[in-house]
Length: 182
Image 1 (tube, rainbow, N blue to C red):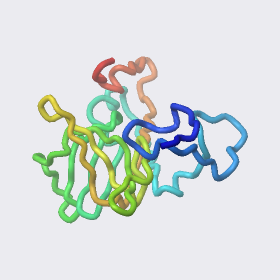
Image 2 (cartoon, rainbow, N blue to C red):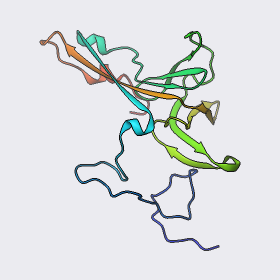
Image 3 (cartoon, rainbow, N blue to C red):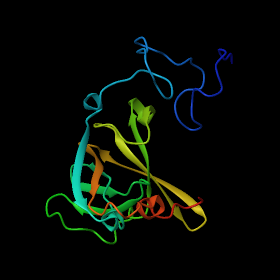
Image 4 (cartoon, one colour):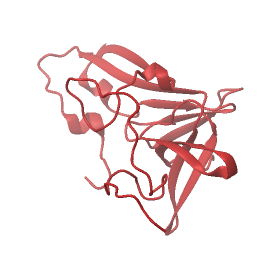
């Protein structure tokens, strides 16, 4: 078996082919960029950005915040800013399923499968519309990977808060909460 020469950082372990070079189908736009690849609009992948403007004391930023929602045909998955699933709602009733197995799971991104179930594309950190969302959850001493049915909608909520008490300093550890391992 012959392998073409490739860079070792082109593919994440477990995702995609390892014997092909990455393709760039369009020139990369000039200007500041982070990472590699082509810049595309959020709309091209079905990602919606929702700006939530609020005014209040800094304590308004404490507590749970639904930063991301991933919608499938029957379910809405709600995530905090760390992409941990906070709640799972039934789309027909908007009732929360407190016992859903994905509560507490981490969103890894999305994947699309081709013929024979082979993974063809992977998106990270969010799934694209049409892809299946992929979750990781610790079950005992094992990690369980699960995927949803195709995603119909992805909403990212950016919170913009006008702090109404100018004499109070904002403490970012209060805003971001405690992050595991940090």
